[in-house]
Amino acid sequence: MDNPSDLIQVLILDDQLVQREGIAKIVEESGRMHVVGAVTSGDEARQILEKRSANLVLIDLVLHGERGTSVGKDLRRLYPDLKVIIYTREKSMVLAADIFRERKELAQPGLQGYILTRNITRSLAEKLALFGYW
Image 1 (cartoon, rainbow, N blue to C red):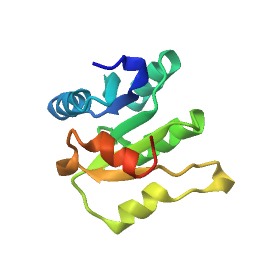
Image 2 (cartoon, helix red, strand yellow):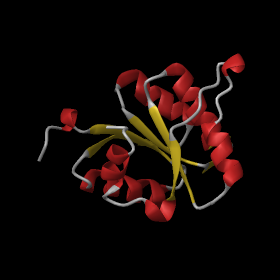
Image 3 (cartoon, helix red, strand yellow):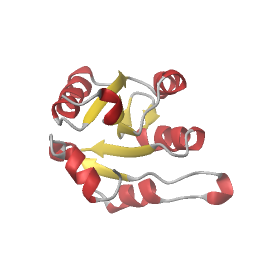
C-alpha cells in the first residue's frame, strides 16, 4: 500500500452517517486517496482543515441547515488551493451553474465540479486525474 502522504488527501462532509461512511470506504478502497476526516458540518470541516491538510473535499449538496455549495465556497475562500466537488442525486444545469459560478466582486470562488452519487466508485481517483486534478 502507498504511503498515505503520497495519496490524494480527502475530507468528506455529509450529515448522513451511512452515506458518509460508504463514501469514505470507497475513497479508501480506491488505492489513490486517503480520508483525512469525515464530518457532518462546515464548522467541523474547518476544524479539521486547521489541523490537517487536504487536497480535496467531497461535500453532499444537501446538509442539515447548510447548502453544500455555500460551505464549499467558504472553504475555498479560506483555502484557495483546495479542490471541492459536490455530490448529489440531483441532475441539474442550474446546480452546475451555481457550482462553477465565480463572483470575484464578492470574493466568492467557484467549485471544481459535481458528481452524481451513483457515480462515486473506486475509479473516482482515475476520473479526477483524467480531468487534470492530479
